[in-house]
Amino acid sequence: MYKEKQDLLRKIPSVEKMYNAEPIKMVSERYPRHVVLNIIRKGLDELRENILSGSINEEDLQLNNIAQRILKKIEELDRPSLKKLINATGVITHTNLGRSVLAKRVLERLVEIGGSYSNLEYDLNKGKRGLRYVHVEYLLKELTSAESAMVVNNNAAAVLISLETLAKGKKVIVSRGELVEIGGSFRIPEVMKKSGAYMIEVGTTNKTHLKDYEEAIDQDTALLLKVHKSNFSIVGFTEEVPLKELILLGKKHGIPVMEDLGSGCFIDFSEFGLMKEPTVQEVVAQGADIVTFSGDKLLGGPQAGIIVGKKRFVEAIRKNQLNRALRIDKLTLVALEETLRLYRDKNRAIKEIPTLSMICEGYETVKKRAKRLVRLVKRKQLNEKFSISLTDGSSMVGGGALPLCEIKSVLVCIEPKGISETEIEKFFRTYDPPIICRVEKGKVFLDMRTVQDKEISIVADAINKLGKEI
Ligand SMILES: *Cc1c(COP(=O)(O)O)cnc(C)c1O
Image (cartoon, rainbow, N blue to C red; front, side, top):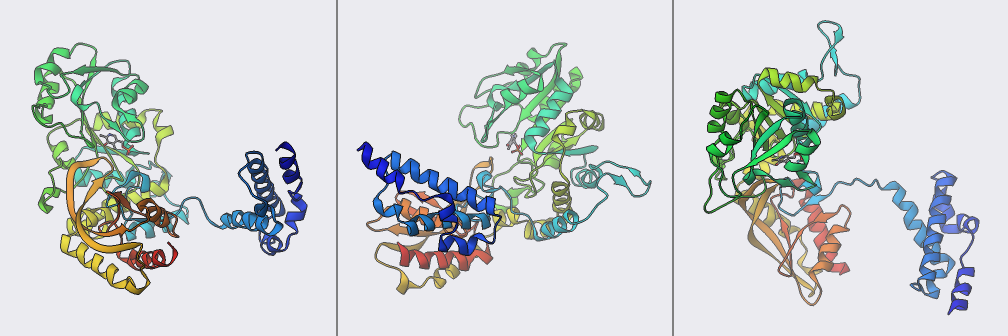
């Protein structure tokens, strides 16, 4: 056995020999020599490991086969790691898939500002250094009626810096029913700890009363915190204190009240038959001192953490040194400004911001798109290994927003016959561009709500190829 492996190991060609092998030579000129040599070395190392672990056969060691393996790796050089893909999961702001797709106008502005110098921190009127926040503050004030506004890298950062500024070394009172964890390890107790604030939990998981908060208040209390239950719901025998009452309590004791809204939105989706989420304007109007929310959830913009509220608190947050570490980048800032500008006209926002149009799009429109897709599928090319049909189902908002809200949608259902559904799922996932779908009850579903019009023909082609290749 040992000798066998020794013999195989001796068959591994030298790096130089591979570099000069015909198929590799043809492409290697396009890349620096050291880059190609590195890839060859890695390829040969892999071969060596495979021999030692016994997972290789003689054929794999033929020069041409080794060359083909290495060639594949060289071709990878032309493929960036971050790829665009098609979201057929029906989860509209899917955190793993980049949450919100940006509006066309936003993309144009990204190119414009990214490709030039800009007045990012330069006051053109005064000819002096300015603040980057002014480029969105005017819009946030206009849209939410808040006294003041600023932005950081994401909402987790917004919560962290708000707590650090307002309550470091002091107590923050929060209901046990609101100690949420958001996917990707954002947990209220942990963020609280990092901020240096002491968390005082009150009430129980299902019920918290105003008197629970009031009894916990002492001279070390710096903040009353409310966290929006974005990604879960407590049903049954429940009670929570409305923000309004908490604000009255705060006023009585001279303690500010903050609400982490999570997926803040400016549009009342109940007008579209969806569940009622408190809008940012409503929360500001009720008198919250600080409100934090994400830029890329229901808002449909870039990743950002938005902080609006009373001037003296927002200004204190802005002056916090931590802000330098959490500050928003210029590309994000321009994307956010342009997204917010669209909100000046609600109908335009719904039409042009993809997250909003996907949420608000009617069932019939989704159905039309699904039918268009099916028409492009060449029935003759399909084989007996699967069947394809349309079925009703539901999409979700995702990104930890509207957890119970299901939006009626139309799905393309691919039912495997004799092969496994995971094989089909993998075919789509490894397609170019990748198509991410849903697997449920042994079937594969493509939700047409999150597939864009321009992607229909690509998905149809993929289904046609599936018929040939699987
Ligand atoms: C999503 C969410 C966060 C984190 O926001 P990011 O923008 O993802 O950093 C914080 N709090 C709540 C309630 C959320 O829903």
